[in-house]
Image (cartoon, rainbow, N blue to C red; front, side, top):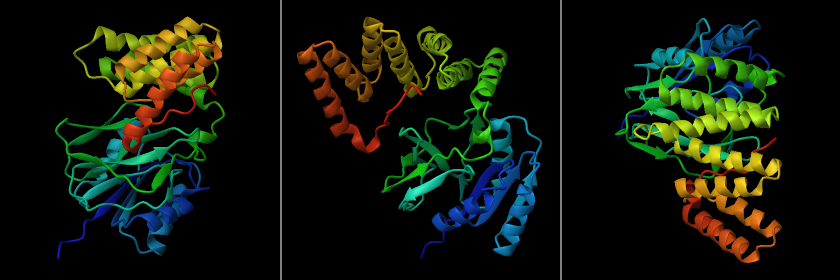
Length: 323
């Protein structure tokens, strides 16, 4: 009989008192968590007391820590460090994320596992949320952070009939000026950053924030800046999805201003970069259909269908780009 695999929770929170109890209940329902590490980053409500009382009431092992806020990577790393040595694996979670469907964890023996996430606009993607406790990893990026580890890390995607619904009802999402604030912060981070990989990432997410407030010309400038890094630094492995989606979004922006040839060019570049994704084929098919180029429309629709059939299990779905 093998020993039980133990899981520690790593979560940062701030002003989540309206939802924190339902979040903890939700986690208890879907995961067998052995140690709870919840790090408050400056709440002015009752979040800390609510979590402390919850752990006591439910007789759960863990700790509630209070850290001064610096940025997402820094504070997530503090929460990660607090989990070291407490369990076999660490589960990262956001207070407003929820599982829909039936998540079945496999026997855990690899270094890191990605879970399937679904955004509010229908986008499905994957994120590493479960890692071995002794894995050499670190959170990077001050905003839109990600967990980083070496290329030889043994990983897998947890595939079953579920997805993690990315919530937008937490404290940060309630900020009406969220995207305006993000533009200011990401522009500042971009200017201060020396790491080329992170500069490219900040440029990409700055563009997304501008898109979210319908500032298409500024979004276009930042997307072009993001693409310039892939072109100017061929020795650096940038995020291929970010590069692909930069072309995809530039095509949509071009379409907004009736620049059909530009849109066509961007989408063809996307296909050259990442032929295993279907979205650019699909958009070209729609474009040609509107132009009465039925043979081309049919050809690209067939290609889109073929990609979906071949790569459906592990593909990223891009459903909506402009708000």
